[in-house]
Image (cartoon, rainbow over all chains, first blue to last red; front, side, top):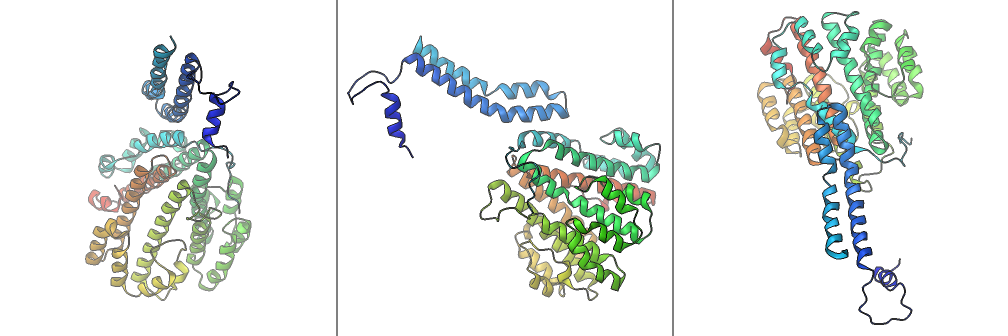
Length: 92
Length: 357
């Protein structure tokens, strides 16, 4: 097992050769914001997997469920929109 | 036996199956529908069914049968269609659980065939009474229905999961001339096989544990029913032969003692974990001595228990099993109504025969 803190230390101090004390951020702000959006999208995608499967099942039984199923399926997408806010706050 | 059909690598698609099951469950007849049905004649019932879930089956069979037979065959065929759908949808573990459970229709079909052969009903009659929702393929079932003698049928079934039990029971059957030992062997083979190859409760994952809970309850209820029937009719039958292993309510020894004393038996059930659910039914049983009412109460309690579990664990196999039970019950109910109306019973009388949640 790799100790998570060492792992972070490696990632965060990627280019530094010696253990120097520095106030440089671990990564550029834009990259951090991009990572945020990416992770949020991953989470939303995972959530939509289950909801989408259930929605397709419901629509297969009853066509009228299409609208409701669609709305429920894309609900987790709001998380990505919230994460997008971070881009405007931080990166721009 | 390794009983994983769907391939263990494949993930279960609980969400999809449960959404479809929930929708079909909502389409089942409710108490109001039954109230209407018990006041109809058989022709009206047939028309009512034609306008409901059963439309396709009624149309397909309408030319060949009429009256109560039409209703009955349409019910069976519809049941088989819905349960085959369940298997069509499910993947992975979920498929495995459902397939195991639906083998109860293999048991049903074997019993149907044995009864038909025993009473010389003929291949056609047997075939139209099959519920083709289990694992046996059509060839085997059709072949089974054409046989003339019970031993021949037992021989044909030798390679199936019922083979060993049936062979052992054949001797009893030949001695007594009764079908009961064979039917009982079929039931026991089914219940013994249902958790075959699953991990034990301690090592099982949550999903398997829930499945086992459900099966245990069903076995317990089956044992209660058998015990009460034995206690009622008694007649020197060996209780151990009717005991189904795997329940938590009785041990074989307990059952042996309790069937001789109905009061103690009722007391034992009352003190068990099912006592609360069954208390009304037990009171009724103690007072009225009516076994049929109690059995209906038992069925209702099992349905309710399955529903409670399904509500508690919505993303599991339980909603599917609960639907299977409810659908079976609907078919039984509609059949009871149709047969009752045909025999000229009045609505109130029929209503007491129904199991409505």
